[in-house]
Image (cartoon, rainbow, N blue to C red; front, side, top):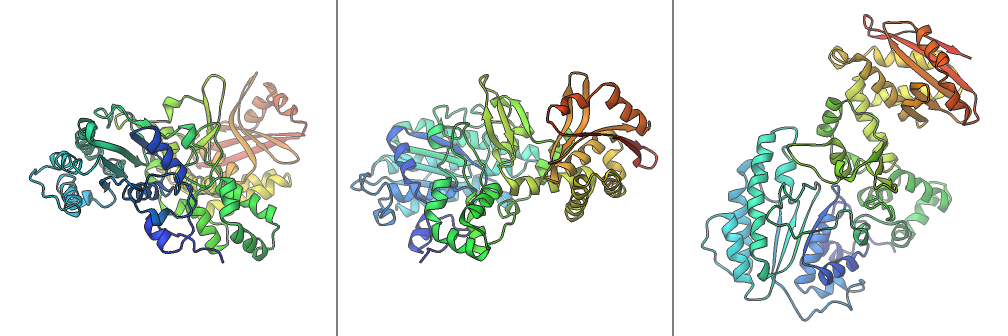
Length: 512
């Protein structure tokens, strides 16, 4: 009988004692304990970070019974135990009370568990005092979960509070460097990765596991793990959905696989989505629904970014960021909306959506942001347009676009009308699932959009307050179609004119 699915569970003891399914990641903990002392890991939300912290706590607490049958059981020295200081900023009520008082209380709670009385008043001094006191019983393990929560919580709301909390935490975490002689292991984890000068300036000896090849699959499920640990669920679900095993696995890969945390590493599945899928046995947007990317979408709209397939990106653009220089690509990567596809010989990366779940959901949000289109309306319109493209019905495509632009709020395109028209069109075309590229460069210039169906290629040029004929003539005179010929498909060229007066498509013309 298959074990219960650990829906919403993030405590290792609760998972094991409750008889829930657990995918064995204990070898990574052994590697950490054997090879270093200070570690940092950034991963998207709901990707197993808290379970890792919980496992480390139980490991150093000597809870051998929880690790029965796991990889690490016969390799760990269970005769030793280390005192553990574990802090999760999910449990620190900083929103209502600030950081100092509840953090000081949390440290006192840990001290009370070890029957230690603290005399210091500040959280920073209590941490130092507790480490020194506990070190008399053995070197101390310090585990910090959601280390960045007091900073990222205020992004897009109160940047001054983010800056204030960053300075506080910078001072707080610096205690760990001072206590080096008393420490056995330090592990900090969270969603974001600030540069070491931003928050860990006093803790510059951290080993960053975020893009480390040996730890790239520590969070998430690999293909092999999925097929091994979910064998019964795969068989039963395939039968229920009237699919072959191979067809089900292919759909699972398309929907929930694709995260890659180092360019040569295996791709991994989102754990939340996998467990929820096998619970409900239907393909839905499970992980995306656990958090709304409103702040990120607002940044993208402000920067005019809507095409999220990114090529030739330096690691500096997305690996870390500062509050004074928030780069959208870094936030998108660290929060799980983009992932690594490849890295070229010059060290430049290609980033893209990890899977269909994230792509569909993010496109719906972006269509709403750029086009003022409700998520449901955008989906139905995209389906209409896809059918029209497939049958070569250019009039149908344009009428669907007109219905979208008829509902765009004036303020969205008041300052940059062409940008919003291009954005809305690109997002709709992309949502259809067809191959679409915007502002495609050719030897003769740059065509606004290229849409590829299985049987044909469409080149589209857009003008504002000119004529559709002028737009079409630009495609023809500059011979944009020559680059499309290489694909071996017939090409249709489409000129489109927008009117700033009607705020909609005024006319279109196509050849052939």
